[in-house]
Length: 383
Image (cartoon, rainbow, N blue to C red; front, side, top):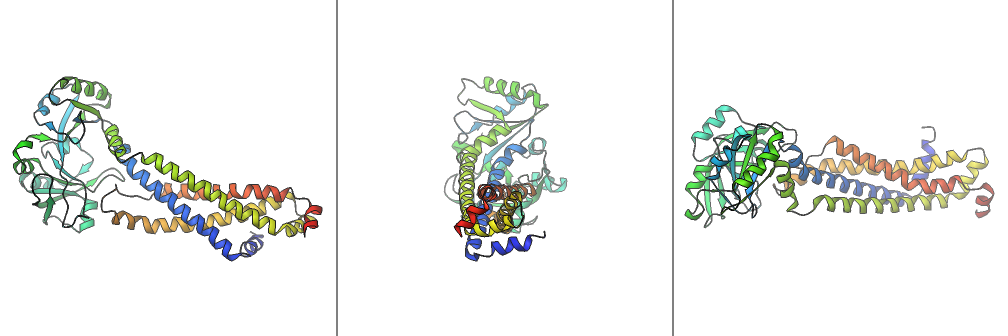
């Protein structure tokens, strides 16, 4: 710390250059953090997926339906403990921008399969008895300031002419898993089936199965698909984690995109900071030579240059991370459910700070080594 005044005096010698370099770090760290949060949002469903759950969809694709009559045959497969079914509803609340996941569920079996979704028994009982009832996640309820007892209109144009469906909010669920999804809206299958066109009645979107043991997954999946092979509607059965990963890939290779952008950010930041430190060292060749001449070691000169680079990286990194802490919750709300919840964790912040320190050290290393190897006579000759 006794050299801190000297380090900061050199840093503030070129104030505009210092501000621009710190600004580059701040922007880069903000972008790094945001990309990490987005990647985490898309992978969270896969990480939290139940190891003892399977998803059965139409072999032709998720947009195609499956007969409701398949349920009883699936239940007879050895190892299958419970079966529920879902449909995509796809409506909007009040305005087109108010989009969120809406699923038609089987209230008789949903809680037996989706055990992490916790709902008070009295609220669930009211939902089961109420044909127009709805259950929503805690995050979604907070977003629109809904409370139990509210009447919620949802506009939907997927099942015929645009129609407003009315629902009674009977309950609010919470997810047992940290970071688990609490943004869904559930409505009852019977109410849905009564109000859709005749030609699509009795068809569900996909089944979700609860197994006796995760060890039964491969065998049960093969048995289900074999049982419906060569039928009018063949099935594709996979683990819930594989289903979630496949669903995310429909939006493109998010991970590759994030890694590519992250690599470009790292390389650009390395060049910018390295160039800044190289110019700074060249400007102070005579001063560094004087330090060596009065007895300071080569290692001290290397430490001196690296310290300046690390201070720039730390200040810029902390500013960028601070901006991320403030901005990401706002961005998450602005996206209106178009992406999974954006959660900024301590791990991501720590990784961002480590990234800043690494880039700062790497960008200052070559200029520092050059300053360390500088001969006093040669340096003074340039002055």
